Length: 149
Image 1 (cartoon, rainbow, N blue to C red):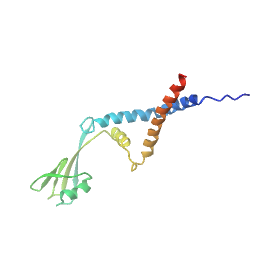
Image 2 (image 1 turned 180 degrees about the vertical axis):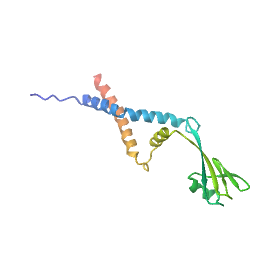
Image 3 (image 1 turned 90 degrees about the vertical axis):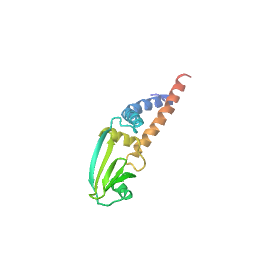
Image 4 (image 1 turned 45 degrees about the vertical axis):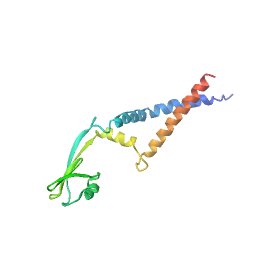
């Protein structure tokens, strides 16, 4: 029996096709989250969430930042109330009111995955996806240059 060697361009085409099927879902997710990230400075698809948090009284703006997990720049002080960009803090009672705009849960998770760094547990997924896209580009050129010879 004679074994036929399949051309390398055919093998590349098969890998390209099946890897494309496998990654089509994550490509859709990155496309959607990328479009949503264009509007990250606006209120598009976001809801305002107001949280009240009891803190110790008589804190300064610098002491509020780590406790509220946000950058607090005091804009004005009226009596016992410190006003900052996304809320206020009553230094007498210790009550902080913070307003944040949040995306729906699924979109927030997609955006976080899109912006992953090495501190994120799934950053290897971004590396794999990026390398797969490089393979798609190179294999497309390889397939079509070999097709028209």
